[in-house]
Amino acid sequence: MNRRPIPENHKDYSQPILKVFLGYFRPHWKLFALDLSCALAASLIDLAFPLAARRAMYTMLPNKAFEAFFTIMAVFVVAFVLKAVLQYVITYWGHMFGVRVEADLREDLFVHMQSLDYEFFDKNRTGQLLSRMTGDLFEITEFAHHGPEDVFIASVTIIGAVIIMFTIQWKLALLILILLPIALFIVLLCRSRMVRTSGEVKVRLAEINGEIESGLSGIRTSKAFANEETDYTKFAEANEEFKTAKCENYRAFGQFASSLEYFMSIMPVAIMAFGGWLIMKDNMNYVDMITFYLYISTFITPIRKLANFMETFMNGWAGLTRFMNIMRMQPKVTDAPDAVVLTSVEGRIDMEDVWFTYDEEKDVLRGVDLHVSPGETVAIVGPSGGGKTTLCQLIPRFYDVEAGAIRIDGTDVRQVKKDSLRKAIGIVQQDVFLFPDTIRENIRYGRPDATDEEVKEAAIKAELYEDILGMPRQFDTYTGERGVRLSGGQKQRVSIARIFLKNPPVLILDEATSALDTVTESRIQGAFDKLAEGRTTIIIAHRLSTIRNADRIILIDEGEIREEGTHEELMALGGQYAALYRFSVQ
Ligand code: ADP
Ligand code: MG
Image (cartoon, rainbow, N blue to C red; front, side, top):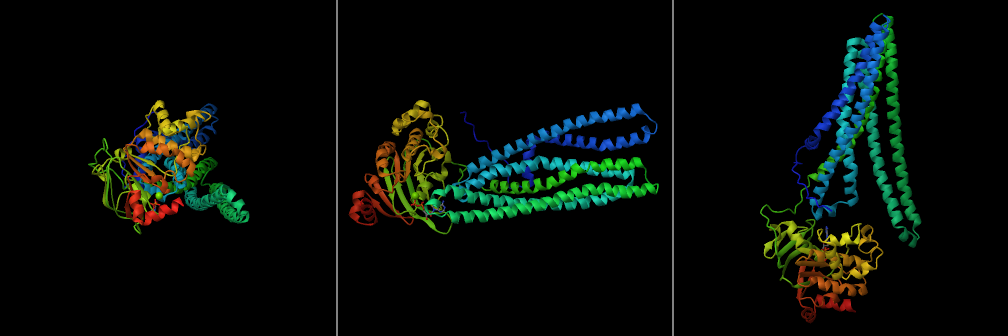
């Protein structure tokens, strides 16, 4: 796999939405111009035909000028072939333009999301983010090319036709000029109601999908409690609401379709009535009447297009606003302009009077002082919710401290390039994330340029090699979604193998074995011991038996260090640690 560097994005998202949006058109302006000029040419052909037909009816039919008449008709047969070609270009290249804008938008959004902090992902659901990456962007690009194209074609055709009509018979043209805005207004009004109700349908659909999902994925729990009726009730309510929303939507659709239909058919009637009167008054002739008929038939498509545009615009703008909201979020944890690259790390960690809060309400860490020398193994224990995980996440700067400082080898982590800092730290957590890929690629994730041989060595060190040999396709075995095909212990050893490949000087084990049973835990303890060798190691442990041999043990409770010392010292102290320890080995 060829690794690609992450592209830099220099767009200024603080500018007005429309300006930023048009900025995405710029690299593809040639396609856009092609799209619009073909659209213009197609409308001109539409406008030209009734005019030419009128001329033919005036001069050629009365004189029986067969040759000239059929030449003109032949010209239009060819012109409409040309229009078909133009239509192809508009549809194909217009969409190509959209696809390219969409790809750019998606790339910028993905790269931007990648740059956002833990905090952002704490607050947003993956499912919603995913729907923004797909649904919203699609709506935006539909708007990007159909918008200008449809509005352009429709206005050129309608305005052009009205102007020509005025030159033919201004009274009849005036009637159309009055009818047309009324028709457009009512049709667009109905369409906007359709957009609103279809938004409601989307919301209800998401809800009912949620109910079905939780009903099915929780089916085992539901059966165990014999609670099918409760689940059915929730489902039935959501189903009812979904049904109502769909009914509303179809009602709006019906109104839209019938009003459009009505105005389409009332136009010819109006022309016949008023035009007929003009003819009887000798103010107009049949040829002009026919020409008018030809012109109003060119209205149908533009009016439909404008009605569609209404929908693309509303959806696209909503998507664009959500896109901009994300793009305007700034990551807080960024490289300082004078940040240094961390090289040959020894692994000393100093935390000085560290304060931290997630939500401004409660201080999760309150003045923690902790100094770890290179190569030392420090265990952190304490009641759940005390702030152990939080403390460890501050070292690689997943969050920044509120007050105080964390230093690595004496340099404040905020003065170090994030990449180099994180390359120096290996983290193993309770739940391991495996990518839906082969076991080899999952291990290689620790260092993407590692050779197969190195991957194998890492697997051996992590005591995973024999397990892999026993798998159906060895290193090529597919691990399944989130690694469902591996046991908990195997997954944990994949993450150990990753760290062996990464080979960082600092190691953080955050309840790495808590999810495993004690037998599995003691079996892979050897792999952990080997991993910790020669590295500064911070172990958060749930089962205190596993950290007895740590150089130092720190007890954290309510964000403060309460006790500190070796196992023997703390036992002799007879405080919180001693109580926890006695309780856990009972
Ligand atoms: P420990 O690892 O010791 O069990 P944590 O560091 O996970 O404790 O949590 C400390 C406190 O911070 C808890 O009160 C917890 O509810 C809160 N907390 C943890 N993670 C978050 C988060 N992402 N957003 C908000 N609060 C959090
Ligand atoms: Mg924790």
